Length: 260
Figure 1: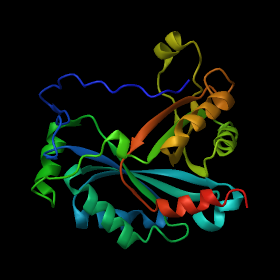
Figure 2: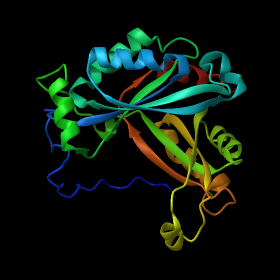
Figure 3: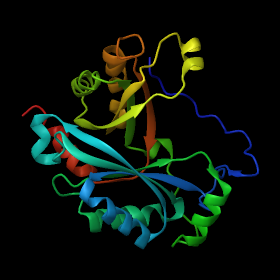
């Protein structure tokens, strides 16, 4: 059901939107999305580390961490208050930023969180120009991450309130260690509902699950069966590529201990 789609070349962008460069290792003005899932007390520190290493436009969301009881000692994410920090950063500084986060945020320690980057296919020109001008790595020479080099994926499931526990359990049965929950609301989806044939609940919970790439399809299929569009949960499930990570080694240890 969830196979890999061949990536299409994006259409030419308007004058106010910068598309990604083609086939080059020069980052130029390309941007990445940096996602940090940390304890709420660490949000300001994360932003300080980011701004000291480079520059970024950041947004904060309240969330709840959840992990199987067998891995709480490793992750420290069991029903705890978390914050998701979403930042747009210059791709040329990605490696520097991730290294500084690993070194200065001590994400390898229990319960400190994880951080990862997601590729973008476009960005408003004024933002790209401003962040590029403030980037530390002015040469812009970076190794562009390709599909075969990526080791992780971010599975996202948006489900009706009160169905997130079923989603978490289904994901765990498929091999995921846990996830992060963001409370949300659907926004004027009447037109989409006419074409998809199912209704979206107003109150939603969005579950973010970082998994090894080979687990993405099994986890998505498990979620589809348990809380997908044809169930009462009315879930919408999709997957995003993940480039670089920080704090993930703790998660790997936790996954290996799920059956203990």
